[in-house]
Image (tube, rainbow, N blue to C red; front, side, top):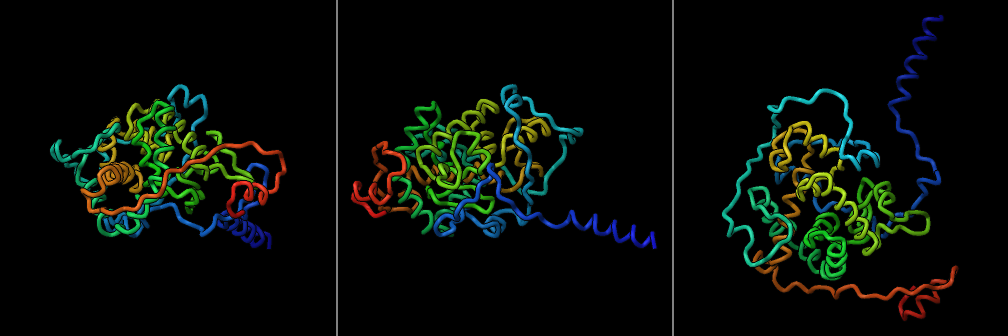
Length: 324
């Protein structure tokens, strides 16, 4: 009898770890209303990326963010021996750099531009499969690009980093991902708070095009200070600085394209930099890539006015001559 009771006890103990725990309200993670439309931030479904590139399905691995001390020193602590440098991945990626005149055309860039087979695949994808959606993103881009470029410039960063927001959200302030990333720069809750974005029951500043851009600039600057390479900084923006730092240490290379030859980085991160380059190429010279006649939205223009606390929004709307 005792043996049976012990047996059932072990089964219940082991099985309890297999069921997800229900979320609970806490001051650090207040409940937030779903954004209108429940929009997804990802520009491509996993099935589309699998069809376009490798059929390999990769499961994202969550890694803890480094501490402030680790960020300051650039030292990240990870356990376990480093794998052999000869560890190869199953991807069929082949780096092919096209002639210099093919990379720039008439546009000028302040971020490195390399056009290879992967970049060309994304350019073609924008031109065909998602052409109508990409045209909408381009039309919306002019509403935010002037403001965002100015904020990036003020922070001493390349203005063309603005195209990260294009591939993150299509410049949609209400873009919302399955991982609960929000806004034009797709900040998750913890990273947004880390870079000064207020997120609570009443307001989500990740949606604010100005404040989120300031936060993104701070994050990108930290990433560049860590890696001294805009490709690795962009990859870190997607995967997290810890993931990229570990990849650099693991394979003993600071070349992003070299890192894509190995299996450690997930496919989404490997595609992130070529996707950014392709988006910048098309956005800077849309007619060259078949996007003529885009009706761009007017640039965002506004004033800031401080109002008394607890002012009714209906009164604010009336003063602005807009709907509530």
